[in-house]
Image (cartoon, rainbow, N blue to C red; front, side, top):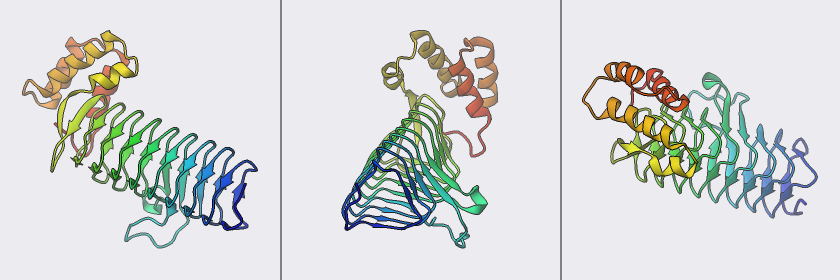
Length: 257
C-alpha cells in the first residue's frame, strides 16, 4: 500500500506488498522488495536497493550522496539486506567510484536512531548499531558485531566478527573478532566478549581456546608476530582461533590493543 501523499518516482520498482507511509519520498532507480515498510517522511534516494522484510522508520535517509570531496555525482549504490531494521533519523550514504561504488548493509542489521553508515562501508549479518554510532568511509564490520551508543569508527578501520565496541568509543585501528573494546578518546581492548560468545552458543572449548590466544597476543607483552607464533604452537587451531589470527595478520591500519 502506497499512501497518496508519498512521492514515488515512476522509475522506482516497488513490490506489490510494500507499505509506503505518508509523506515519504522514493527516488528514481530505487528497488524495494516484498514485505518492506517505509515509514512516514523517510527519504530513499536513487540507486538504492532495499531487501525483503525490512522496516525503515520515519525520517530515515537512505541512499544520499556520499560526504566525500572527491565525489562528482557518479552513479553509485546502496544495498540494504533482508530483514534489516532502520530506526529514526538513520543515514546511509551511497558508495564512491574511487571506493568501489557500493555501500552495503547486511541481513538482519538493527540500526538504532541517529546512527550513520558512510560511503563504501560493508556490514555483515545481524550487526547492531546503538543510538548515534557512526562509521566513517571504507569500513568493514563483521557478522554479529555490536557498536555502542555514540561509538565512532575511523575510515578504513575494521571491526571483527562478534566484537563488542562500547559506548562513546573512538575506534582508530582494527578491532579483532570476539573481543571487547572501549575507551575515550581511543579504544582499548578489555578481554574476550565471553558473554556475547555464550549467548551465541559458542562451545566452551572454543571460548577457552580464544581466551588462551587472547592472553598470549595481548597480555604477555609480546610483539604481535611473537604472539602469533606462540598461538600457532600452543593453542588448539579451532576455526575461530584461525579467524582471530588471520584477522590480525591481515591488518593494514594496525590492531587496537
